[in-house]
Structure formats: C-alpha cells, structure tokens
Length: 453
Image (cartoon, rainbow, N blue to C red; front, side, top):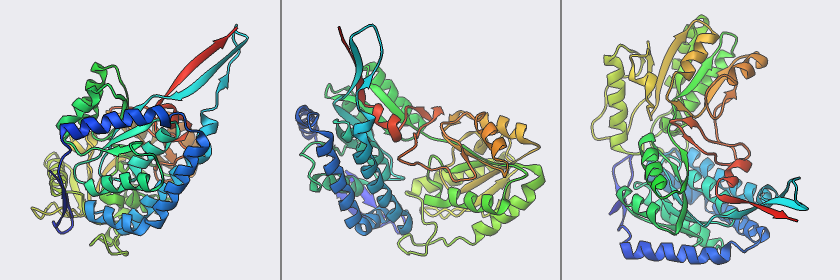
C-alpha cells in the first residue's frame, strides 16, 4: 500500500494499493504493443500532443500545485512555478525535437552515408519526490517526442502526483499506454528492469539507488542514465558582490527546504570576505518566512517526510560532535515532525560529515579558504560532481576557474538550475548521462548508420 501523507500536519490524504504482478505484466505488454504504432507517428503529431499537454498543465496549474504542496510540503508559489516549468519543457521539445533528430549526412567512402535516429522502445523512469512533476516531465518530453513510450515508477510518497501525471497525458490525447504509471515497491524495480519490454532505464535519486539500478541494468545489458546526489560548492571570491551572493545563497539552500540535488551545500568563502558574507547570510536567513506551505507568503515549508527531517538532524548533530560550530539556528528537533529550521555551520573541515556527504535539507556548511587556488582544491575534493557556482566580479577569472571545477555544470554569478535548453547531469558519484537540451533527447534513441553505394 502506498500512503499519501501531508508532511506539514501528518494527515493521511489517500491510499493506493500496489499493482499486482498480473497488472504490471499487462501494463508492460500494452506499452510494448503501443510502441509498435507510436514510433511511426510523425514529429508534427507528437508536437501537437505536447502542445495540448502544456495547455492542460497551465489550465490545471493551481490544482496541481496544491497537490504537490499537500503531498510533499513544497511552498505553493514554488509548486506553481514547477508546473509552469513542466509546460515549458513540453513546448521546448515540441518545437525542437524534429530538428534535433534530423538525419545527419556524413562524408565517407559511400555514395551516401548518414546517421538515422530512431526510438528504442519502452523506457523505465524511476523518479524522486522532491520535484514530483518536473523530474517526470523533463524525462518524458524528450523521450516521447523521440517516439518512445514510458513507464513511470514514482517515489512512494507522491502517488497522487504520479496518478495525476498519467491522467494529464491521457487527457491531452496521447494514445493509451504511451505513458503508464506503475505502483510498486522499490524491491520490485529489479524485476521491472529484467523484463524484456524495458529497453533502458533512467533514475533520479540517491547514490545508493543509482548504483543498485545500474547493477541490475548491467546484468541485462540495458542502458541507464543516472542523475544522483550532489554536494555542490558555492565559491565566493574576494571581489564578489557579497549582497547578491548572500541573497542567492539563501535562495539556493532554502528553496524546496534545501531538498534539491543542485542546491548549494558547501559554501567556500575567501577569508577576506568571510565575516561579511556570513553576517549578511545570517541576516537574510533570519528574514525568511517559514510556515504552512499552502500560504502564499511562505518562503520555506516543511521537509517531505518525518524520517527525512530526522536524518538531517542526525547529520547536523554529527557535524557538531566532529567540531563544527553552530553559527545560526538550533540543534534541536521536534521529534515526529517534518519541520526543520535553517542551520548555519562553521568550521567545516575534512573531519566533518558535511564536507563529504550530501545533507538534504536547509543546512549551510561554511568553509573559509585563503585564496582561489584553495577554493578549487576543496570544491573538487568531493565524490560528487553535479553542479557548482562561482561568485566574482571578474568574469574572465570566473570562467577560468569554472573550467577547473569537476562537475557537470558551473554557474557564474547565478543560481544553479535546470533549463530545457542546457544539458543537465553530473560526473563522479553524481551519475552519468544527460537530461534536457539536444543531449537529453539523444540518450534514448538508436543512432543508426546507413551506408549506400
């Protein structure tokens, strides 16, 4: 049984039975059968479907946002923005997929030779709860526009969102079984991966979950795209606009209550501006409105589950026991709630868990460095490599340093974010493969060489 629970007040909203093995078998067989016809639809036909999908998302925007807020605690204004972003990615691929997948002529010893792109088949998506609509749509838009069909195994705490997404595709005119939702346990995923109908798998989740999926997929020689955790560096140089940097630092770490793989987590600050940055940072954190996520004035709501809040509390406690200094906030936690208030930690060293591990909540870990060179060394001293940002008034310096940082993305004087036009993904333990942009649609197509003499 999957239980939808409001993390703010603990109310049980709805319960869903898991799909039986017979139901799952039927869903997979129907998806594969549908692929045999859907793959032959034109880009124009698919684009019209996604245009209707974008329109439906906007029509239902407020109701869908309220669902997100109720089910995982995201502030309503952020939830509304998430639905709008989903509509935008639908339109982006509706407009660009055909150009992206146009046959590429290549000079060779043939009379004619070219690369023809065609869909793979049924793609399994294992998606997380922190952006319950956006994560799904940024996978689905390029995947379906390429002519594939999709199976969604969503996070167990957002079943209402999973059901609503399936209904959006259906109501937008997509043929039955082009996009199907499966309610199953995490343990059942390995059986899904093994099914011959599943041609490839994408997962957004933890390092542990990604490794497990990759292991099972590898046994069956199936392609995977892994978008996993991060411990992003937020580098503040001495010549940075400290007021702007501190403002964006707060936004990055408290949006979605810090539950984002690309949220800034390690704040690496040159010593000459460390005190100034810290003072401004704490002033701005203190001014945040924290409360009921359904209120339009709320800037930070609750974490998505009680156990997640407790995990963050345990990590903060461990950091303090390891020598970190509590600069702001309280190392107390109301047992049994999903509410966790922002905390600022100083004296983060290599002996501190926050230096090495991802903390999935509103915790600011501050690291003082002597110069730019030390900042880059610390930024790269991580098993993760998803994103990062650099704050400096010298753009040439910023670009030069960005090229040295070992991540999938570096933003200079801006918040790290996903954008349909830009490739998104990481290296190291943050995963492999890319979502969004041209690269995202290429992940689940067969690049077929055709040679003619």
